[in-house]
Image (cartoon, rainbow, N blue to C red):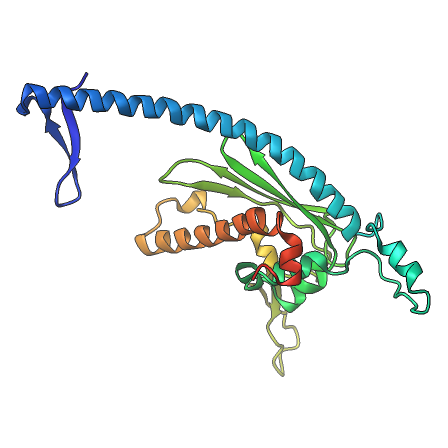
Length: 271
């Protein structure tokens, strides 16, 4: 057993504390306390193992509830009591509405973190959002999000995914998105700008440039360090850190707040 112990000095730096400088009886007390702490580590390891089993069990039970919600939201089945209520109000002609229109769009918009990401153009395609699911990634303590879309006029994908792999304390996570297959001239994350032709330029070939646009769908292209530019300066590194934190805030909000409490966000009760 080491006779030295780490302590932190006034400058915030770790230094070794020499236990040999302590009286014998004090050293013995420290060794007993250290053994108590080792027992705590063992209990904590057991707790984490049992918690993982419990989380897995209840995640499966949650999925059953989410599946029921999906069927009602998308009009696959009718909610219990709707037919009975309609029969009791025969004088009132019911509106022909399938499921709960714009359910996920409004749930997302009613959350402060996500509302800032959504533009008017985004709303038009988020109306086609049918479901959002999440899955735990056990090997990295991360999670995966899946956004399910009906056929829509902007992109081909039926599912868009975002994955967070947890790494360590210095690099909390690594995010991976996916390519969105936009239809021609429908991309919401970029726009092409053309330089206007000047008078007298008969053989002028139009110049174009691409400009990034604000859009919720930038979420599926997370901020990354280019392999050609790994040695970035301090200010760029700090900016990247802020971007990655914001990206994780959007992902974790979707995962841990929106999905389990979607109807409360839809109605505004979760404010």
